[in-house]
Every structure is written in C-alpha cells, then in structure tokens.
Image (cartoon, rainbow, N blue to C red; front, side, top):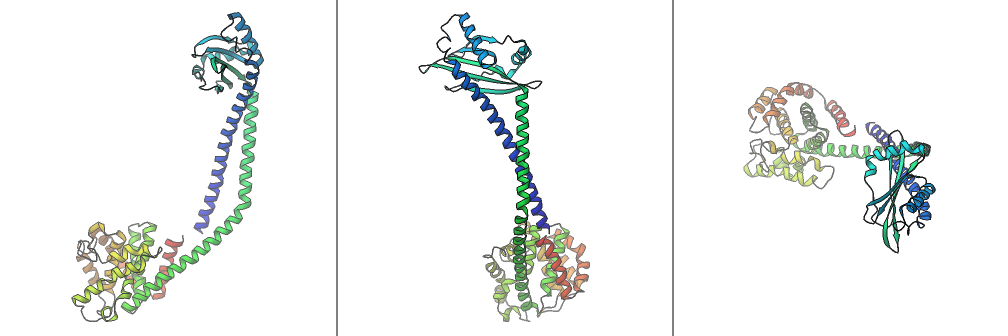
Length: 421
C-alpha cells in the first residue's frame, strides 16, 4: 500500500513539475519571441528607410542631418535617435518634441540600463528590451550603417511601447499557460489509470518475487538449522533476537534487510560440512575445528553470485569474528567488523548457549548471560552487549515460551514491515 501511495505522490509531483516547467518555458519563450518579433518588425522598417540616409550620415550639414533624422524618427515612431560614427563616438542626438513623450524621455535619461550601449559586433541589428518604473516599456535598437562593406556608423533608436500591447501580450501568455496546464492535467487524468494499473500489476509481481525470495532464504536457513540442531526454531529465534536488538539501536531499513537475510543464511556454508563433523557429539579435534571454520567461506561462495542474497555476506562472513581480533576467518577487529555482524554475533552465541544441541544441553538464561557479560570487549562489542542486556531477559522469556508457529507469525510481521512497506 505504501508503494502505491508513493507512486501516487510521485505522479502528482510529476504533473505539477511538468506544469511548472512548461509554464516557465512557455513564458520565457513567448517573451523572447515577442521581443525579437518586435525588433524584427522595427528592422524591416529601418531597412526601408535607412538606405536613404547612408550617404548623408557624415557628409551633409547639421541642418540636413536634423531634417533627415526627424523624418526618420517620425516614420519609425522613435522617441529618441542617436548617431554614432564608426568609432562609436556620438555625434548627434535628437529627442521627440511630442509633449506626450516628455516624461518618457526623462525616464530614458535617468535609466542606467540605457547608458550601456549595445553596439553590434556584426552587420546585424542588436536590441535591448527593458521596463522602466510605472509600467513604461521601451525597446532600444542599434543599427549598423554600411556602405560597400565599410562601416559608416550606427543609428540608435528608442521606441516607446504602449502598455496595452504589453498587457495583451501578458494576457496571451496567461491564456496559453492555462491551456497548457489544463492539457497536461487532462492528459494525466486520462493516462493515470492506465499507468496506475500497470504499476500496480508490476508491484504485485514484485511482491510475489520478493515473497518467493524470502521463502527461499527461509527454506535454505531452516534446512541448515535442521541439520545442525534438529529444529528450525533456531533460525526463527536468532532472527527475532537480531531484529529486536537492531530496533533498539535504531538500525536503518536497508541494514535491517541485510541483517534479516544474514540471520537466515548465517550458517548456509554448513551444507558443505560432513555430518560426522557437524553432528559429532564429542569435542572436535584441531583438524575438525579447522574444517568446521570453513563453513563461513563456503557460505560466502554460495551467495556471492546471487544479486539478492549477497546482502547477507556481511553476516555470513563476519559472524564468527571477535571484537579483539581473535575470531575467524579474517581476524577483523573492533568496529571494522560490520555492525550487523557484531549484532548477530551476540545473538548467535546467546541462542547457541540457551539451546540444546547434539553435543550439549541448554544453559539457563542466567548462565548464558553471564558468559555474554564476561566476553564483553573480547568476543563482543561492549556497547552492543550493554544494550542487549537491557532487553535480553524479556526477549528470552517471550521467545522461548512461544511455539514455532507463533515465532513464525511474529517474524512474518517483521519481514512484512521491513521488506514490503
């Protein structure tokens, strides 16, 4: 259910994200398109007019220039025109005499952005669209004047844009964005059921596969436990003990999954140990002990090629390591031993002590916990032992009083929590 809820949240987030991205993209694209369209329209008009002034730009007297520029300004609706020579030096400026533009000209002269003249570096027109205070909009163009590929100078013109034009543009942008957002939402609503049911089906298949994998580790672990102790309750107990201790230290979900897998499969390598050693009632000799120790590496070899089972390697490989470095197979020491292996090491020994095996009778809780305490700092992580001591008595009493069915039911609930939620 949490996965379906997560999918729904992601789908809603994706719809909102796509709507925002589309809105922002359309806004800036339309703004760019509006500006460049306006600039190009001016360019077309400039191209029609400017050729008449190319030869007069620097060759005619001041009064003739003023007459031509006024005509130029009137034809193109500029409110200010400046002329520059080829070295970008201003030699003429003319402002509109129309009184309705007086305050606009004041805004232009006080606007810092207009002091940065954007001289083009090629024969193409450059432009700058800007907004002044009180919703005044202007476009500034720089038009290079060439004759026979020789640069004669530049014409800078400033055009006032009626706010109504801008308002219409903004309303058009809003309408387009609303249309796009509604289209995305409508499309999402139409396609969501299809994706939802496909995802739900995929999730069901995932759950079936996950259940199969968990049944597999359960079966494998119980198979080894039955060989070693005539009961599969050992696997249920050590896994429950390990989960409870891990919960006490607030182990994260990913490591909890690794711990559970490792708890089930910690002794899987014993499948490669002969019965005459594994089930021997007498004390093992040195060679037999060395053979028994090989079950760790055999277990790693069995799971390392399985992408889902290899999470268990930390426990399988290190659950016989000791905190003082005297364990096996690699003599890893202290905190270098993975935490989940340090957790399981305490649990495995505790359950071994309190359980009956072919070679020994079960120890009492008091005897077992005394041994655990005495091995703090040598065999076990002392901090983890101290935490285990806080919960060990209640765990022992409740776990050992339950039937195999009850143990399995509780374990199934915990597995559901850490693997399926």
